[in-house]
Image (tube, rainbow, N blue to C red; front, side, top):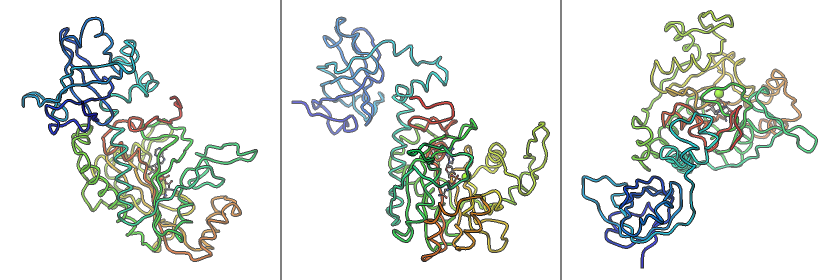
Length: 440
Ligand code: 4AD
Ligand code: MG
């Protein structure tokens, strides 16, 4: 009897043995008397040869791309000059169709399809070699992040995403009708993570966040996977060290898990070197002035940035690409940042905040130390126009055993876009959520 194997298990270990494989037809090459199939089952790819009665004209048409089949045959090690994934080839002696396919598939998406047509067919397009590799890396990436956190004794939290308070400012909120009262889809789980500090100490979450982003850019989604962590009793410097350790450690872990897979998608991938460059916001303004990176006014004229200006995405990326390595952008002016950020002791107009910028993508992490003083927080609510009543549970953290603490959020899709050197963030989403797309 034949041994039932996943493609991942098909290796020279089973050479000359009869095996049974269940898979999708990834690709087929019909040479009349002999048919070469490339099979795919999510665990890998397998080359397969069918000949003789197995490719009789009456049945050969059924071997269509994306059909599912059961194949039985002998695994053989091909001559060294023939490259086969997994180092083996299946010489079939039996096959049977499980689910048929349709030749119209070739017309649905092909070389001529535009981006919209491709993403309307995301469910099909995802089966492609590159897209399916990215989905695997996405899975391994989440595993690597969790591994990092558990190894370093963080606890995982999964807070609700339906909320009645906001974290990052009101303009990008999705409102939902919660039994007659307005509620929001969360922008960030940070405030809840802070309440878990006295319960769990260092903690993290990997949870969806939502932003009603109207801008159509190649790095903005309306729903994204947000990795956030919060740590008690740390300093601003320790916060930076922890983020740097996270990024480098996860890159190393991920690369070790499957170097071939990573390199097949991004042949230039290299684990970044520590320490990352640290640059104050004020230095970035100076950098832009010195290097001809300017802000565009509404009438199109270009002028130098001044302290207090937000450096927009394009200019930020230009600076990042010129420098060509990861940058911690630190100490933003308080007016530019969220209400909860702690002030710098040496200059109270600045915050102990940071963005981590990566070449090609820009910001992948945003974080800060948090206001830990009760009165200072209440003042900050007022300044931001927030209803203090709604935040009673957040304020209580400063009443019952406050601590200096800090944390950050990392966009999983931003991280993958950088790591895989993808042109557009949509390519690393399972199903992208952007202003123009909610299907499929
Ligand atoms: O910088 P942000 O807005 O920070 C926060 O939400 C903090 N509350 C996080 C925290 O400290 N716990 O978002 C954090 C990260 C960004 O750096 C970016 O990687 C990602 O979330 N992000 C987005 N990713 C895709 N599409 C969007 N529209 C995103 N908005 C933020
Ligand atoms: Mg940010």
